[in-house]
Length: 118
Ligand code: HEC
Image (cartoon, rainbow, N blue to C red; front, side, top):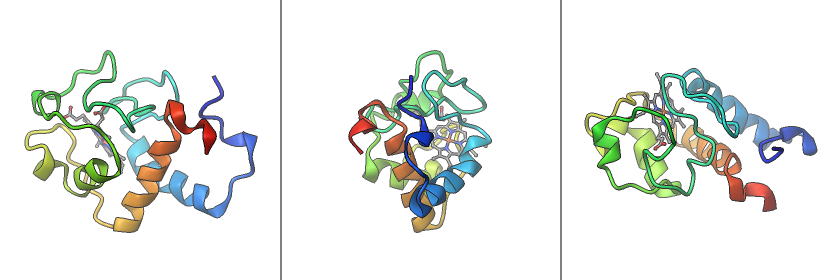
């Protein structure tokens, strides 16, 4: 599986910023295909799919019943204030800085199966 392999092209400053922005998240989340669930679920492929749909992760009832699909808008709102968008979500980590949210969303977008064209 090479879909998440960063080494196929040199890392540009934008990619570097995205990777660094995800470092906070990486404390609780992996982002490679088939990565383990840590405190939070593996996020590979989260972009573009239904919330709470990573197999084998014990999501909160709140997120399971949220009916969200992860795209730029829903991720931006959720990451800004998880507890506002999904009250009682197990994720409490808020990303206040819009630039950081954009970087992290771009990162997630690249760590999804349909990112090969990018
Ligand atoms: C302290 C641990 C922690 C940190 C840090 C954290 N998260 Fe989470 N995250 C969680 C947990 C726990 C859940 C599961 C939420 C639930 O079930 O309600 C989650 C869920 C998610 C989901 C929904 C996944 C799905 O399959 O629906 C996304 C997207 C997400 N986190 C993105 C991020 C991003 C991006 C960051 C960094 C800016 C981040 N998280 C930082 C713990 C964390």
